[in-house]
Length: 273
Image (tube, rainbow, N blue to C red):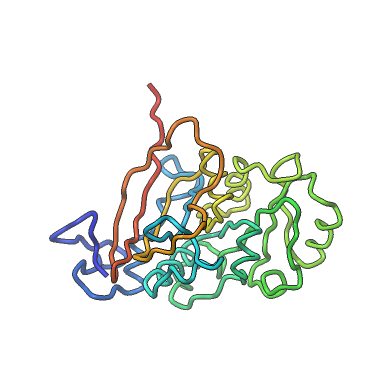
């Protein structure tokens, strides 16, 4: 793996870990974690109260899956980064359709991150938070029966009462983020932060990611570009209404491994005039 941007001929070590060798063929998990570390989050004057990061993979022609799964577009390095992003997060936010399509399971304990998470006051693993209106989910699946920390269900107060009750009996924690049948995406990050889940990661799908973008709450996008073409009718990484104005993002970093590009963009916040 090599860093393409920002380039540096003399990497400067951080207090926690040495800067990765940009010419090394393979980075360690610790080096990748430093590359993707969250900005300071908390309640200090110089800290963000929460940070919502998206992570998606897309083919060269813009498809987000092949045959309904994202795995054919992935690679070993992509899965390393996927695992690191999860290991850094307090919570992974995902739409119900993606849970069903990808067969989501609870987050795994990662021994290499145990001390780091403990020092940051994090749970042993990130919580999985499923955003759903109808709650048409299999509550006997491992996501609900085997999590290290309880799975969250984010919905509206008008969601079907019988499904809410079934979710609660299965051990899920139901969070109401709106008065209608579905969650209000603009309220989701704040409600999670109020539960202490400030380092937030969303893995889509495209409808949920589009809703977060439309609500103006997406702070960062990590996009893996796969050197593969699939054609077909697979959707883009975001679906939803056209934004009134294009949202501006700035490039923060690019890594490369075997033709895969791992990009990281931060949203530019409008400044007060």
